[in-house]
Image (tube, rainbow, N blue to C red):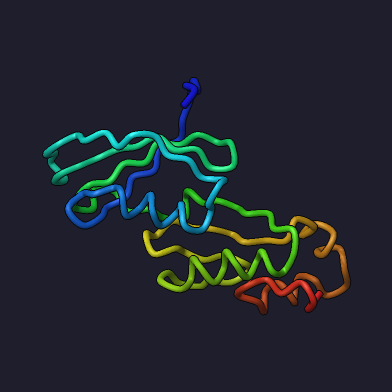
Length: 148
């Protein structure tokens, strides 16, 4: 993978510090839009065994690190927004992430690793200009476009 000057890094915790299950989880939902580089073993650290891997998602580069024990939990300070073309795509991502994660409101959810996502239609700005759009959004967990 080509080197970027600045690469966001996400720190996960996983069983035995193995990063491959994390890569497989995201590969399954993002398919051809997800590419990972080689897994780099870091060995034993104060947080247990650790590995890291550079990956690319929709053309953006990230570094993923996994340790056996949680060092810094993922939280709402870092999140990703997915702009979806239609309800079918919203359902695809929402259902995948919430199957082992959890729902919040207004299109927000956490996946099974605790990473926070907001799953929105790409025309969300236009939808929010409709009468009562705020009330509709506040009443939803998963965004349902037809409700606007």
